[in-house]
Image 1 (tube, rainbow, N blue to C red):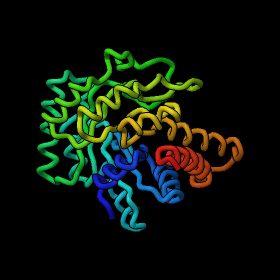
Image 2: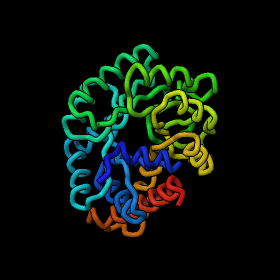
Image 3: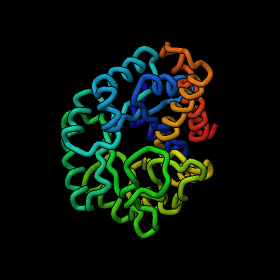
Length: 288
């Protein structure tokens, strides 16, 4: 089986993107995995600090490892949005394939300092674990939005700058970079999210020299996803859409069967809704 690094490099050369989908329970994992099997594609599973607290850091690692070994499948696990060295260490010790140190709200100098320490630690334990750094703040919660998150970098002058991306990568040694390019966490209910700055993505990829990760994918227009991939994005994060599908599936089951108390019967529609959402995103990201 190819390594995660090899799969990312292959995606970049083919101008496609790997889907990264977050979970906090087995329902989402089952729906995501069914979609990856349907299209025979690799996938990244993400668990943020809050999601890890709920599902269990070691348990998440064991669940993904079990699927990889039982089905001989390229499914990998990322410690998404990790803000402390202690939580990074916890994920590394649990056997995660990748970690994201999120210093997006820090000043550049402090972000570089902390990210460099994370890279040095992770690579000393296992050089095959990929380390991602975040440069620029894009909001902090995958929810349905009513307004732009306070402090999120949306204006052109606030987006990640190519020269800062270059310096950040050189001084930290990160394998992957998540920039602020007009993307935000969460999605608006009845309108698309703000536009991505495609030209900035291209400039950052050329300056940084490492694959780019697009966070806050939920709510972005399909044509902008494709343009972002062509400009240099190799991994795309989707979370809010999955959470919404989970809720919609459960609501439909409860409405149709108000007396039902068997959990797996109520949760099966949620699995199916997640499968459909993930399948559509995988088709788009892989240009199928």
